[in-house]
Length: 166
Image (cartoon, rainbow, N blue to C red):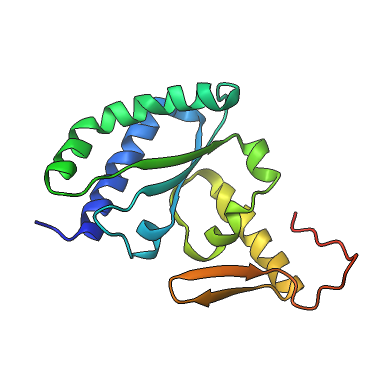
């Protein structure tokens, strides 16, 4: 049996194929982040993923209904993993390109640990590059304490000062 991290790698490959099938040419980006992307996944780790696609249904419920088709495509593999003691929950964040361009605090951690599985025309890579550049301008830093961390976005912040990331 493969270690959990290696099993997640196979799942990510199949996930991309399922996303291409469900979203078709509307798929812009598939990225993973979190413990799987950092290489610290355990058998009970979820798979955090960002999907950016055009022509998405409006609202969270419509998008999750569409994503359910991805989960259906992965059903046999997810079942096989479960039988090996690896219980994978897929945790998607699904955005249109326009929504992604507005920014998200989720992207902070993605500047250091995202794996861009599929990124048409470097869409997310460019957003993360710009955010990384902005964080550098602010002097921002990721403060790690054990297995936890937080972002100090502007160490020289003064009360009343406005800090913009996007």
